[in-house]
Image 1 (cartoon, rainbow, N blue to C red):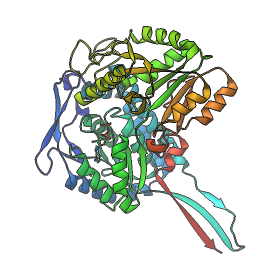
Image 2: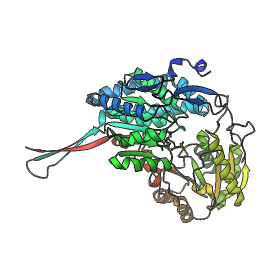
Image 3: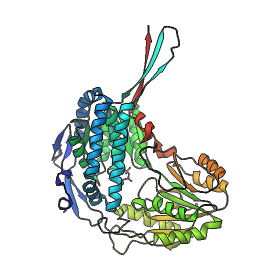
Image 4: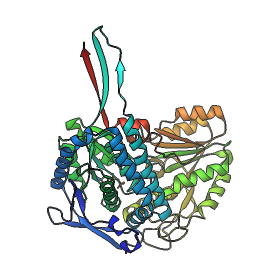
Length: 487
Ligand code: ADP
């Protein structure tokens, strides 16, 4: 069914790739199924690999890396440029594969492919500019030079919510600077990772530089990644809990880490905000990917003077969101990823209602059944409710009322997370005060959309460490070495 929808059916595979070899079977012979969350239909069957295959992939990466690092930045840039071109040329097919395994609306999936490709383009360009430094010597006969070198073998573990982009923005800087990567995509969405590997091969990424290990036993694969001393860096996007486990495991080797973890984004609307713009921003920030992104607005704080008006306007817009299969025309909210995700959304709503919140819109599973949920707006939400502390990861906008700037900053910062935050105001002084006071890695000011390859994406506190994208993002894949020369 999937293949029939593609212009180039060879972009789908049922094989994993290690050292340039496409493998139809795991050592154990076990397989796992990928299903379409919109319909529950079977999409593909893949080898269920474990620790042994992960270890072989690390060996393959280790073997390939040194020769790749010896190429010039310009040579690596040319390969990434080709990969970017191939991603753009095949964006329709890549989007179809993505929607089929993950459920997001096809147009949104296509947007993700172009977003993922933008990192490939960006880091390809940066490959030529991994500059070092010279430092005036500390003694008359000393010359000091700083060079940046690839960290070596990088292991990556990525989630299902952006099956292409989360991997592309790790793979691109790694490949750009001369690292080799072993990647384990989420078991829900491995096909997008594999199609990226197919295109990487076509673009001229050498065998062993981009390996994809597919499997359901993520804990064993994660152990191999963190305990194998050929791996020099682990880059992970996923939940804070799993990030913590991996960080602990990686500590034995003092492994370099990149962690993009959970968020609990505040979205603040001040009395002086442009309300229509704030509603637009809330829609894109809250309901994009059906609320399943780590930068989705999770707590909407609205100042008392505009609370009712904002709630009305938001509910009117949210009512227009069309829920359905990502391949249906005009659909802008797909299913949730699993029944566990449904349960969490229902639990957060039930908890809020039991503590005094009210449903302004939605609040229930969608009449279509399955994993579809009604886009929801809750009013009268307070800090005692679960939804204030935990990431809901679903289409629920909880509206909190606040009175003063100090109050809202305190509430916004009162979380262990520190990824994205947003606020709306037209007062320039307030804009600087609030932006500087928010304890977050990213602040959207009068905008609900902050992700771009040109800016450093990442969090503070328990939302992670390291940055992806921008000139800062490439540094995470290099080590600094300093040469002290006595003349
Ligand atoms: P999500 O809520 O997005 O599924 P997870 O953190 O559970 O977040 O999953 C993100 C990625 O981490 C997935 O690829 C998953 O398979 C992987 N993962 C989950 N648990 C572990 C673990 N113990 N060790 C290594 N990887 C894991």
